[in-house]
Amino acid sequence: MVLTYMTDGIVEMCLNEELVEDALIKQIRVRKVSGVLTYPEWSAYEYTSGQGSVLFNPLEEMADSRQAALDAFDGGDSIESTEKETLQIDRSRSDQAETSERPTERDTDS
Image 1 (cartoon, rainbow, N blue to C red):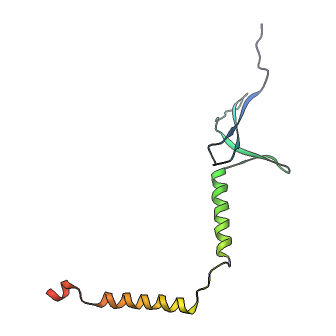
Image 2: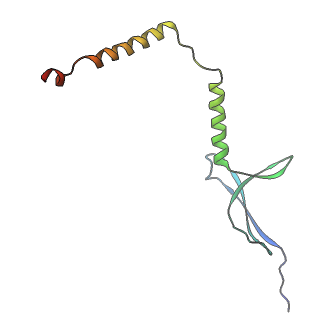
Image 3: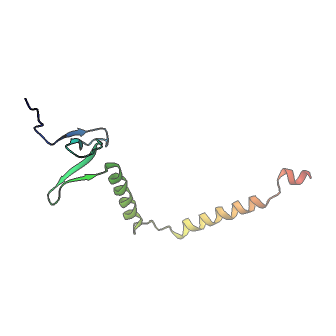
């Protein structure tokens, strides 16, 4: 009696809800392939219409989207200060400079 494999490999797929809050992330890993060394690590993937299944790192994607949002905010949506606000800021800086030049108790005791 001869026993042979019916398949060339084992592929596992799962839905992970722990990687990203309020989202289901599809993951895949290759457990075994005949004649190939494999490292069974989970990888997130998504199916795109043009490329098929594409691997991605959800944490890097979130960081990139946050950075893009920050860049868009810095790109011209800055808040202009009025002349009155600028004068108040300048006065507070000059007040700080005067207080730092005043003698302290240590200076007067010596």
